[in-house]
Length: 454
Image 1 (tube, helix red, strand yellow):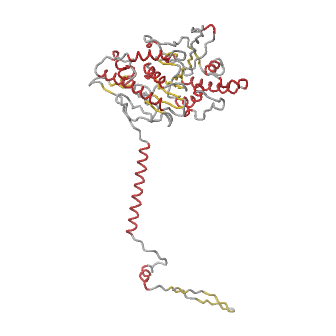
Image 2 (cartoon, one colour; image 1 turned 90 degrees about the vertical axis):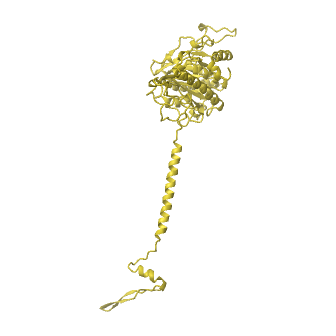
Image 3 (cartoon, one colour; image 1 turned 45 degrees about the vertical axis):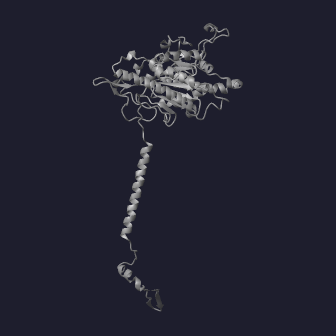
């Protein structure tokens, strides 16, 4: 029970006085023990159970430790970089690994960084059979020993049907190189290796590839080159050396389809120019030379990049189209018509190719927005635009252009395969060229044992 009172001040004439009320607090009998224990303090604190505090502390620590462990586990899994080893190669080909910054597809990660990059665009009409033949010629050209191969497909991402073809052809190539290295380690003569191409350029001594750096494609490999092999006890260590193979959908490199606002339908032959700024800007410090190739129109049987190897980074090497056939089946004379630039193959220094690509993209936009040609804007051709562009010295003043003086053949025979670097197949009988190349490949026992269509 609580009784309260007040303190009052009284005033009476000249005298003053104070009256005091008493403040009393009465506690029940059962709280006597609590009153006694707290009599030394004017405040009352509840009794705390020390065992309860210890239990809750242990639970909190356990939960925190579990959360830290799970966070560490998730971080480890998210940054895990698998080191997939192929039996006779650097990495197992895979179509699940992004090629660059989460985009594209990595088919084969090369052993080292390369000096050259092949940008090969695949137009709407290319079939899997044509892509297959292009790859078989490419692997026999020697280009994989110094170049990375990058496909640009006419889709948002890489088509599955093309993925399977590329992976299979890559596997055939790696098996042949692996077989050659085995023969070399067993004391065989490299030049006598019975294959449709010379694998000696893909097997080098270890010190020749050390220090070139890792490829920029896919996950970074922190271990040593897994293709290092020592042939015998005192023999020199050898490594396989070849470039990467990657693919991108044009929708990944040019997702907004920037030319769609100027044309009703943007063919792949023109849209590819809008995709080059992204990829060439990203790899400009990683390569010295670039070659642009149309898979539909060109087969690479050799290495044509030797023409620009000693040129300046601003150089661009162009080729003219072969004469068109007349209605009587004979090719027209060069004197009767002007030879136009063939955009199916363009090569040069990475700086020159970048500048040419930017100028070509501007030329496409300018041609399609010209009011005098609006009714023909869907008839703009890549060859016509490029031929007109190269005559504009002001636009290409920062590019060093050079034209090919040689005539690139449009046919091939089995006896001339090794002597040709490029073949135009746009105006040729594709089946005849395919038959000649496959006959050459299947004439070697190692190749014929691998390829099912031999």
